[in-house]
Image 1: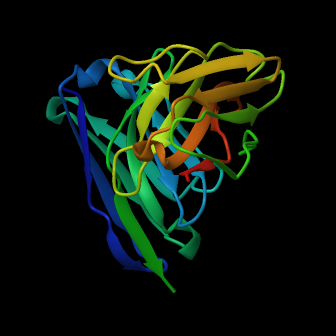
Image 2: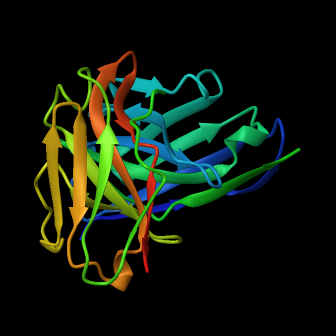
Length: 117
Length: 112
């Protein structure tokens, strides 16, 4: 069974940093591209960042470019998101999402990040 | 990120059908067969219910069906059940700049 479990969310002050983690199991993690997607309170889904298998390509939404860094450790079946210079508008539930051939196919339950001003 | 357009809400009584639209452009929904639909319940992991416009993953009831006409994809939930009350989002491959997939604005489905 595919499982994605996020951790690392919490309350942080504006300008602070957080590192999100996603532990993957039940599939061959190293062969899949992975993404972070977020949902702000009362808002829709927003793609945040993408990393290809083998980490050969990494992409970011304009809203986080230069502040967030995506990475993966295939030996630990883990995905990460380092978030720096956090802003109030980064407050959201952050989801770890597997990308299959046809698109996003499995999601974690999410971890809540709250940036206080 | 240019979002696909969905109606903010839809509703139906148990047993009825509800259809949600997802309008994009000839550069996303109308261009690729990679349209997906997701069901979101608060506090739970979002769930893929339709992929490649019309296909259902294993375990998804056949009450859920997808279709497309031009630049608009649709999700139909037939035989509404109480547990279908949730938020539904569409997604399409877009491949513009660094944005590989774009999401819809989301629709809240209420079972009356």
